[in-house]
Amino acid sequence: MAEDFSKLTEADWRTRLTPMEYHVLREAGTERPGTGELLSEDREGVYTCRACGAELFRSDTKFESGCGWPSFYDPQKAAVNISTDTSHGMVRQEVRCAQCNSHLGHVFPDAPQTPTGERYCMNSVALSFAPKG
Image: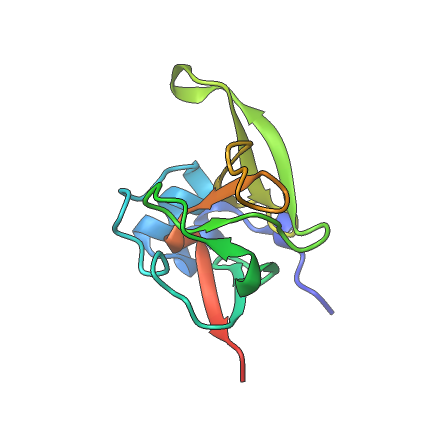
């Protein structure tokens, strides 16, 4: 039986995640640009939610956008939810894991070099990577 992540308390999340993971995933924080461990990852594989393990992106949708965070142009079907984020005096589209509602990053319509035209700008600390094979 799959775990019901909606029943986890913030105290539960704090015991499951490192302080930085908790800050990003549960408090909608961000890591400094250029510092994420998955920024330069170029092997074939799957990116999953660090909080719950849900499959989010395949490596063939990752691209170098120059923004300082791992960028993807297409999430797995029904893997993420998008909502309007008006924090910090900006209007952006926030990306959250559809399975556990953890904050992953933001999506921007500024990637004309991709098939979708979108740039899913994700925090490395919000993701885990499983290489193929």
